[in-house]
Image 1 (cartoon, each protein chain N blue to C red):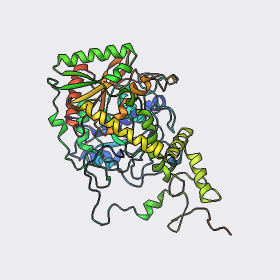
Image 2 (tube, chains in turn green, cyan):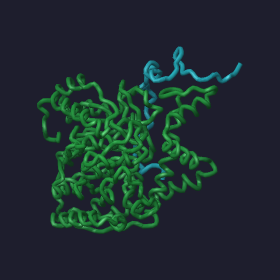
Image 3 (cartoon, rainbow over the protein chains, first blue to last red):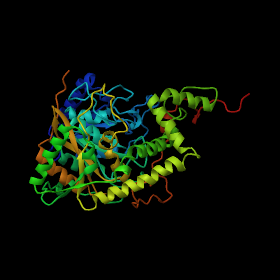
Length: 470
Length: 46
């Protein structure tokens, strides 16, 4: 933990983090690159910032001036950041020491950690399992004990799902709460900066560091940043908690349901009021298709600048068009090219009304439903996944089942709506962690953190790490 | 729905120079650069 703790020996703490991440790398494959830390350590020693001396890792889609930033794609493999992202600068100003960049599913597209340019990332609890994605490296390095804090980004559930699979805290605040300037985008209307910690207190402090208006990001909010840590109150008495009924109905795993029921009983005993809330089931089943259409369309537009002309990897051709085609064909994996094809199809003039505009309309209906679901409660909760982390070899998911469409993908509603949403550990099943997702109303991060702290006190799942073994 | 919600962000600002990349920084990552320009295949053929 770093909240309410002054790091006395900064150099030692940072080098311990670097050495542990290096030692774990052959097993976890979570890092893309390590950065020089000498200058940052010197600055941290004289810093009075809120994260002075805290070793941190950034997802490799966060720009760092003068440091390689690949987005985990071949086409950016040689790209050196031309400027610092706003959050990079904020972390430096707060005295944090960036020790390196972590692996992600290419450009943030994917939820398994198996589509990284640098290879598969492994779950520290069981190396034969996935750790989720796309912010997989950042999640794994916090869970393994290498660093107490890391940055991720969340377009569908890319922070909150891996947090569930590796037993840590994953936060996606309100859309506009943290600047996205200098983050390689995925889908602009859904992208959020998120982050990982091992405690709710650290999560509250971290948002104080990261949040705030940034004129360089036109979607960033003017709202004042609160003193989340100082105001933190974990008393659940009188808190109104909604259970996302559709998600519970879709979960077929008895062990998950048993763990969840026991957790809810503890909440009741702590004085919380519980209500089960259902959304329109038919519309809810449209979440994932709507997400794919919107996200892939926006990604196709955003990444049209990755053409091999101005930066990144270039594959020469006899004409400009051939150069771009060659560069993009070589520079993107099959999975990414497939997403761009879907995006281009949805963006085509003849298809826009039928696909993209329709998806945007359904998004509105879903968000209206979600708003109504949260109207009379402080937070809405549900297991962040229907089961523990899947095996790397598991490709059995029936993608048309309610389990897949709702139980595995309900957290995308946090991106559709922009509402603040976080995952904390709920407990373990057969030694593997599984998380609970908590969502609050827009800009009510304080309420979300308060409830999360109360729940963390009930589960006792705080500062969880796991020793990485072969 | 194009964006999550209407939140005043006031992205109109005074027309003053701000956070400009130098030519050196902008061209640093260029695969092929010549005299301050990106180089592409010849468009007008001989």
